[in-house]
Length: 327
Ligand code: NAD
Ligand code: UDP
Ligand code: UDP
Image (cartoon, rainbow, N blue to C red; front, side, top):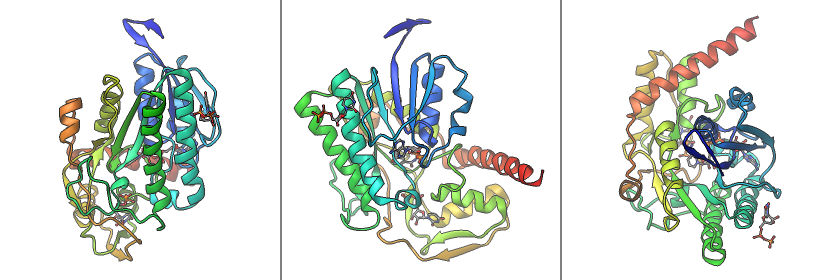
């Protein structure tokens, strides 16, 4: 560790650092003066998300797949590598399981050798299609182990198992966050998740695709609140391991989300209904009592406000790509 400008600069590895959440995290850690090593295989992330950091002397970018071992010297690891959108994680399900499971083993092996603290980006998907509502951390979940979502859900569940076994067996310092649906600038325009889909469809005047009748619910957290939560959890004492829910408890139906996006974009897109995907969870809302108590954390950005910023991002991105196509 180095002491720079009054802060203790740490060597921090961010896997999946060129993705949506990873790139925001890298940006903040670099701004705070840490030595950041961003590792990504660009499966669902983009180099463009971090190119603005490449000139910084305390930022390094490495193309690497976390299913292979990685030998570097670090003080902290944020393990975010894994496609998060159902379209992407179901594209190559075997690779998704390998990323979660082999990736966790490699990052835990690295943490064990270097004595680094390691953060795991787990997910509300560990609760599956929940029969307990809202979901608190003590709930064990309702997951189909052989369905199309299992590569992600069970991969992340096994990663949690590995984190707690490395902690108990080898004393590795772990921080497990269960992240609920998070959105914001730098999501991939073809990410396939609902917020980016609806916004891109509305801005292009395409049909808004609601899967099923639109009564299913999700609770959406703005990225800035989420990154603050990651950092608060990483900063806790060693006895705080999680799992800890991070998300915004305000719950919306997909129909309400579509109406809000149409309202905010002023789009005249039509809403169409497509078949609901298999095993699509019907409801999801985090109980964040533990995060409030342990981290003194709660989201502050309401959906409407976060959507306005996200719409501005996609509007700008789409007009730049259209301008390029016209040139
Ligand atoms: P994302 O797809 O934008 O980012 C994931 C990044 O991981 C991408 O840059 C991708 O290229 C990289 N990656 C995938 N497989 C890899 C591999 N084998 N080796 C190296 N890099 C690899 O998604 P995101 O929303 O930023 O999600 C980040 C993390 O947070 C993921 O682990 C995800 O499961 C978790 N999470 C996100 C949400 C959410 O709503 N955004 C919810 C729950 C959990
Ligand atoms: N590992 C790694 N980087 C390191 C240390 C370990 O990628 O700095 C990998 C290592 O290749 C192994 C995995 O992490 O496959 C788990 O390591 P551990 O020490 O737990 O297991 P072992 O090497 O004893 O099988
Ligand atoms: N969804 C939808 N239209 C879309 C994309 C998704 O209605 O174009 C629905 C999807 O069926 C699910 C919800 O929106 O019920 C959230 O989907 P997403 O893929 O964003 O996240 P997850 O299902 O992993 O929570």
